[in-house]
Amino acid sequence: MTKLRKFDPVRYLDSDDMIEEYLLAACEGGDASHIARALGDVARARGISELARKTGLTRQALYKALSGEGNPELATITKVADALGLQLKIVPATKNKKDAA
Image (tube, rainbow, N blue to C red; front, side, top):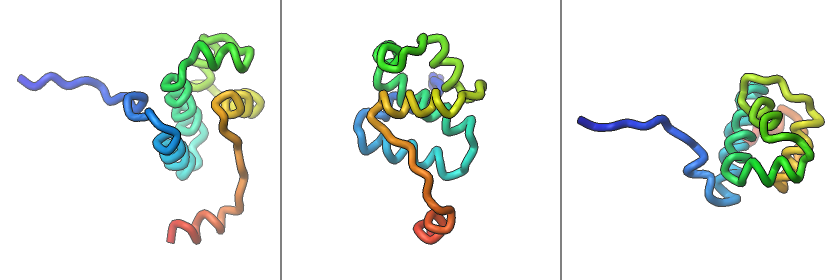
């Protein structure tokens, strides 16, 4: 009998390039909960304890905000992105559509 385990993307987020591609893909759909969950995956891959220290947020607050179930404030997302060495950008939607075509 084959034993299956739940897929965990964290196992594959082992380089900056993989993390970048993962987050870009997560942002394509524009679903806030999906983006938050993807940031949570990156946070777990990089170390949630260190992220908590850098952001000044508790581990529990980070898990909740980045679970995809919570509704994190933009300030929280910005703190997390900064602590992960990332920056948020807003670009015209038409640019994204041209790039995809």
